[in-house]
Amino acid sequence: MTNTVTKPLAGLHVIELAGIGPIPYAGQLLADLGAKVTRIVKANSLELAVETRGKDNLSLDIRRDEGRNTVLALVKTADILIEGNRPGVAERLGLGPAQCHAINPKLIYGRMTGWGQTGPWAHKAGHDINYIALSGALLAMGDEDRPPTPPLNLVGDYGGGSMFLIMGILSAVIQRSTTGKGQTIDAAIVDGTMSMMGIVYSLSEMGVWTPKRSSNLLDGSLPYYRCYRTQDDGFMAVGCIEPKFFVQMLDILKLDPTSFGDQNDPAMRSQQIETLQTIFAAKTRTHWEALFDSSDACITPVLSYEEAPLHKQNKARHDKNEPHPAPAPKFSPRT
Image 1 (cartoon, rainbow, N blue to C red):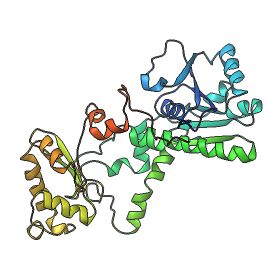
Image 2: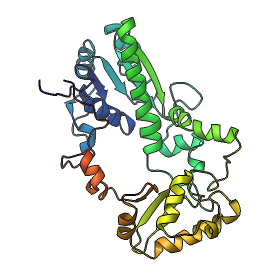
Image 3: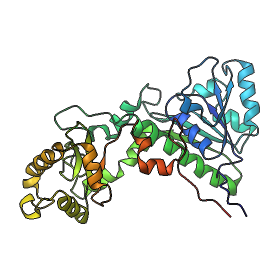
Image 4: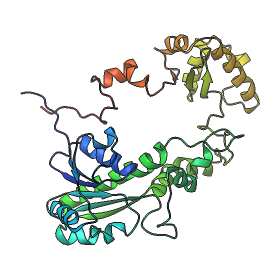
């Protein structure tokens, strides 16, 4: 028998009311997982290639009766609808949850906003940087002597937004299999980002995290968890948190553990950072890549988005020469 991989969402039909940021990415993930995604777009709208991958584009003006009625006709047999408008916009268009559920009670209606459907800021404009600022995440990022550094839009839009919307949708799909009823999902980027800050709250309760930037375990303040510049202006990422990996780093760099000092001695941190800065700056990134390639010291090159697809590990995982990142996660074939 031939081994085949059936994508887990095959057979589900998703309607995506085109938006920006987390909505098209959520639609892309659902399409990558096998769902049929019909993306409703405005005529002549600018589309990023990654936003349309695996989707069927349908050009409609949903502000007009004809466009709205076409969407409602699709809703009758659809499984999921996702939209990212401000609260109340979909309702004014005649495509809100109540209007769609009146046609199809089994529909899972996913709503994606920055602030959520309720609260004093529900109708306020915003972008990724604003949502992660209100979550406590942004202030924890970057160097202490500089303003907080926005981490692209990965933490808010895609982490706190798309991923939590997808989790809500898939949870509702499972629930529908037993109840036969749909669900309305209120996914807010600020909610999802705050949820991901759970580790910070926990470490704070333990007394090992402080609001002061660049002074915590995972924010680049420690010698063994930060990036170092190389001779050719590249960077190496050092992440040897566990003592056994820390020992491997010292051994490979030929550093005497006694003179280098204890891994978690606050009095030694500045000196240890300076020592490692000097060492990594003396050789090229290629040199350090080769030296640590087969070790468990948790030291890796910092790659650009152009270099990343060419790294041997990524090439082994994604064997197609695609212009954009391949779908994830992967699924084992069934016999």
